[in-house]
Image 1 (tube, rainbow, N blue to C red):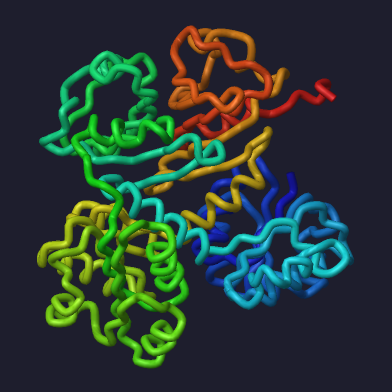
Image 2 (image 1 turned 60 degrees about the horizontal axis):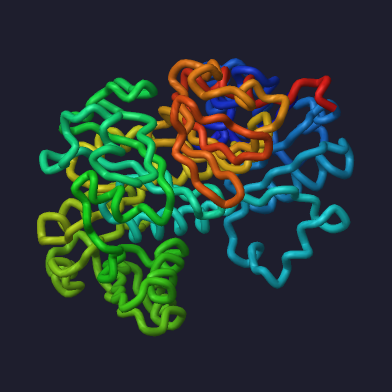
Length: 458
């Protein structure tokens, strides 16, 4: 596949890294140093110029491109690049990152059409990040939470502490210990190692970061099996009154029963704007790094402190202060991916990395096969995929133990006629099943191969 990526920032470069292995990728940016860095890191071609200019797109190979992914810092350049790619070069698939809430107003939804502005898929980082934070508020003991299968299946990352009741027990005994619990452990991160325990013989150790897949209706019991019985966060303190902070505050107010939400915002004008927009939510004008301001927000009583300012250092330090002053859980937004491994060791419960979330949103439109959804796990160590099982796939019609799944991959759940099935060795995947798969980074290419449809299928 020939793919053009507009923008070589964190998102553009990360997308290029995911796709360059088995696609012809060209990346465009006005910054020559960033282009050089991207081409040094990955097997791709770089073009220097403005992504929306027709001559630049032509130089990037737009005449033969199958897809354009526009993720520059400018909404306008992203939209115009898609328009030019469509009108001049007939590019089949066009994806644009759009941040401005004005452009995302549902009342102008008809704007994005082939007749007007031909963007096939819009990626809104702020909305995606807000959703990610909201999911963590509902499962406060987890460091990562994703929904798949139209909400029927949860993907959860949880740390094994000394109080975890299943430490040292072989994974295969989990269903014996917790009868009728639809749960599958698919990945264990232990230090720099990622373990995919398909035979059930592995044991969890203190400090492990474990990813499991379970039926949404079994979430409370699944978390209890790891020693986490915290209810959804109802008392929330948010640092940061920007777009994401306001979206999260509104979500807490409108969708978590009996909730109480306070917000800290350092900029006076932003604080006033938030107060006008968010009725029923207390806005505190002040610095989240000031202990007196945190005390005014009654940080010692909150279930979850959420740091969503536009400064990574403020987010990390305010979260650490909040924990010190008594907050039960912390969720911290960090844009720099290189910070994430370090921050996780400091006592922050959950780290939100917007570029990684945006990458997941884009990949679901790029991966081969009938991919419905994708969720990348922490530190980009692997991906969960929700795929539709086709009769041409080698996964279909044979017991899973004979399906020859690539090493470092596993089936986490199967959805058949709205029923969630926990996979076992004798489970047979049928055509049209929705399958939740996990693939560690080194296995993604091989998993894509088994998901692809043979040419003779058509």
